Image (cartoon, rainbow, N blue to C red):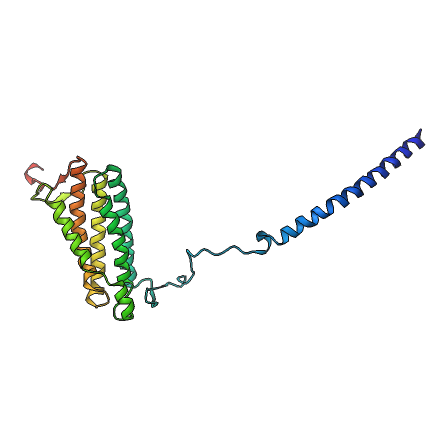
Length: 241
């Protein structure tokens, strides 16, 4: 009985050996093909492409202007560009609320955001150190300032007159437009040294000056078109204290 069991095991082992050998012969080509595909695949042999969003060139605290000149990031030029960038972002928030309420100001705000990019190009191309070609390409035309003045005249003519200060109020569109107005004032103040040094054309400062006035008119317009109440400043009555 033991001999029969041993012989049975031998037979089964022989059968296993034959089957296993057949399987290896069958699977070997497939395995080799899979390996070849893997070795030639992007995962094994190809390096991922670096994003163009970062360059590493500013890691030492300097950055490049449009004319190729490198300056420290603490330079007033980058302060001005940062203020304009912040202003453009806040205008995006204000435009969202204006479009959500359908107050009719969305399109003009989108156009102004594009003009701020044009303004940034002019600031990033100092007139004294840039080629004539680059200065001409980034010149900020006077017509944009004129357009703002026309927008101000149009909006202001439709608003009830006030004889005191208007406190930022009147709904989300209005208060965000007033927020943009205060950042615009800062952007204007920061560009003055560059204008006085003749690095930036004076039209840049003029546009920012008109833009803050436009944003005041736009904030009041948003409140009135949306049926919101403006809060006006009142001088404190000391006798009531």
